[in-house]
Image 1 (spheres, rainbow, N blue to C red):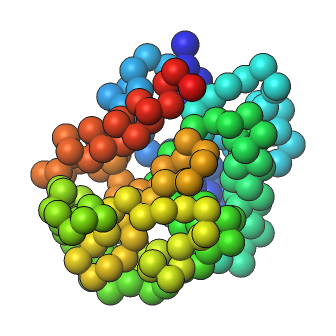
Image 2 (tube, rainbow, N blue to C red; image 1 turned 45 degrees about the horizontal axis):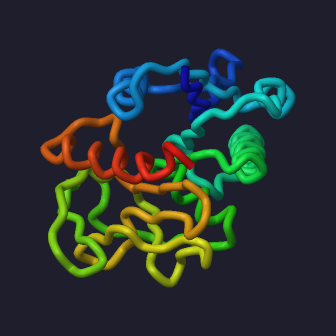
Length: 209
């Protein structure tokens, strides 16, 4: 059975004195739809606890989810960044597949040496994406203030899909089985079926490798 390690957003609840790791429950049916039967393991934003999940015999798919701005200065968010960096190092060592979603894609790009830009009109505004040849592909949801412009894109990534305003909405690693997308597949919308097929087609290429 496939194991999927899923990173989580971190929330600090001041009036209760709690720091919470959070995962939208919609991820469970979404991952089932994308990859079939699996064991989903939410990864805690705690280095030692997260490290204990990683063994040389484990060959999971890794999902970097949304939530939290990459460059937030809160120590809790910095620890999330450290955990995701560790997951990416583990994926590199074992040539594991990675799906990075919205903030996850932004962080993946930054970890690979890329940057971020501020975007306008990408919060709560569905829009159409276009492939490299300029042909229309499908509609996606959009919930991000920060974006990856083409000049921001890390050297190791290639553009798969763009928005009309030339922001990178999907990118793939040139060698590793890693895909970053700026939309949220766990939040359904008019283009849901096409979005899911796009992600499935990408990872299907690596099933026998």
